[in-house]
Amino acid sequence: MENNTNIQSFPSWGIAILVIVFILALIVACWGFISGFNLKRKESSTSSAIVWNELFINKKAVKFNENFEVNEGIFALTFAKVEKSDFFLPIYIFNSDDFIKDSKEIISQIIEGEFEIVNNYMKENKKNLKDLFFVQLEEKTSDLKKEEWIKKTGSKNRGFNI
Image 1 (cartoon, rainbow, N blue to C red):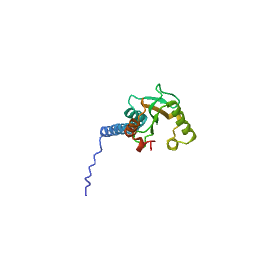
Image 2 (image 1 turned 90 degrees about the vertical axis):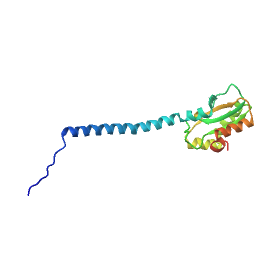
Image 3 (image 1 turned 90 degrees about the horizontal axis):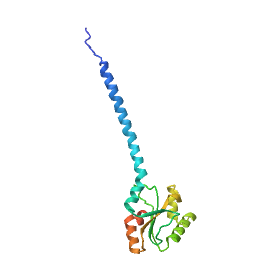
Image 4 (image 1 turned 60 degrees about the vertical axis):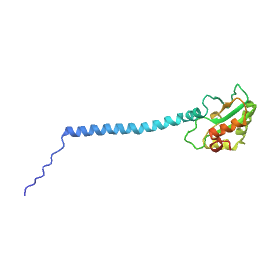
């Protein structure tokens, strides 16, 4: 009996092309994988700006130890570096006839652990007073406007105005 197996080997230039295509595909796959992480990191670093720009567009904001030019109105206490995808948005809306006095009172309550919901949020999210800031929403106090801001920001359901 005669053995009729005629196996031809793949040409060496064909193997070289396959190796090059495989290496290129591996490089593109790794680049795509790494780019996905970079996009996620970029979104999380700017997400707080997106949330606050949507909610507090054109509003003045100061750090916890600073004051506004106008000392009365409707203000929001909130935090920097917040994830917009979080269900809970750390916003507390309040009226004030004397912002300097009221803000110092709120800060002292936080320091002494008496503002429980804010203290729990800070502890769970590893926040400190440096991450806290105030936003001036309106220059005049008004319960109606305050309720509008609470509704607009969702701070009754998703924030500190429980």
